[in-house]
Length: 221
Image 1 (cartoon, rainbow, N blue to C red):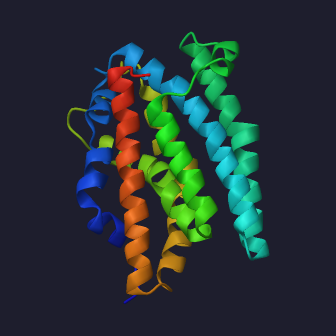
Image 2 (cartoon, one colour):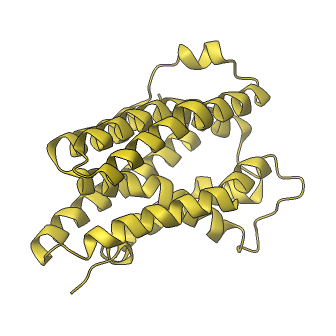
């Protein structure tokens, strides 16, 4: 049997749907999410991006081919040169300065997910790392695409319109498709025992992503 990313979602259906259809996501799409919940999420997401950059550095180190090495380097460059700058500018629009971001303590949810990803990548191989990260990039693309189809979602007058448009945008959707293709190509080569190991990683990462949304709602430390 040739496994695919969709098989990970099927095997982790409960955790995946709890993450993708979380109340935080639904309220964001409807424009009813409390502003303080979104601000808290934005600040912690800045810290997550820093660790995401570290994960791409680890991905480059774990790469056995030149193409994978380049992929890791390009991912790191995109985060450092583009995504973090855009995120800082977006935070500024929400009244959060770069100095405030730099002084932030990490929430327990941020610590749990980012260290899980880095630990998984350190202990395992490149596929382990990408599967641990996949709920982030592939998940955000899927969440945005799902949200815009929901009857309660609105763009006009929604204070989170820019967030929705960024993740439904073709650039991000294409990046997510390319990541899924990369994962699909490598999942197709694994046996049943190895796939079970990857299901465990994916399910845990999905649960930790859901906790990240919940952190925003709770404004938890």
